[in-house]
Length: 314
Image (cartoon, helix red, strand yellow):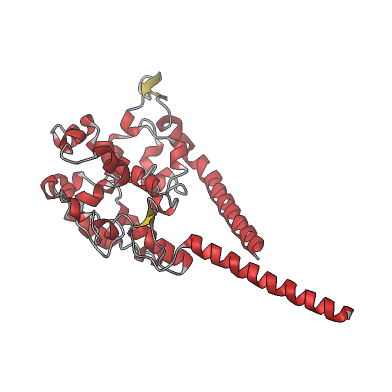
């Protein structure tokens, strides 16, 4: 039975990978012209007025990695699904560059599958965030969730450290980059200096997401989106280092729900060999219990067969 389940699981994974690759193979030709320019540091085009071939360096902001794109959540889209068809001409017309870009909620939140992710509530929380208050419509979902590379990391791995690293990199893309931060705000910022009050600073950066301390907790959302001003951030150690830890409502919430859906019970999230969330069962103990149960049944079966054999022999 175990080998049958393993074989079925493996075949399902292989089929999913094959289906994904088939979609990518169909999309790549449609996006080739875009990545021929935006996928490399230098690009060329013909000046229609002079007839001369022009060689330019791609602006870093528009330089894309096609390998990351085809690993992202949006791998199945052609570029012009989201960008104006005017981009099919080179060089791109100025009017196309000024177009209003889509935001996440222009596409997400309308299907039955999307409903469970509560995009409308995420949008409401975002409109109350310090990002929107300061920048208005000049700041959008895209500034944090680059549609050309973004993946929902928490749904691709159960490694909490990997999730933390990926999520924090989204924040540090601007907050640890002085040039980008100054471009958006006109101000200077040094993340390490701003957090010099934090004990064991590096350990916190490696083990906790920025949003744990910098967003308002919302019990209904898996990921809080109401980013608070710096002076409202959590600074009280007890908020996290306690029995009713703030982390239970934020960092580990997703894993608990995913484990419940996968295993049929609330499975504990364990760090450093100790429970940080009250759990009813443990996966390792479950496997040991099943193994003992199978061995017991096997012992009973062998004993019964021996009794039958001995009885017949008499």
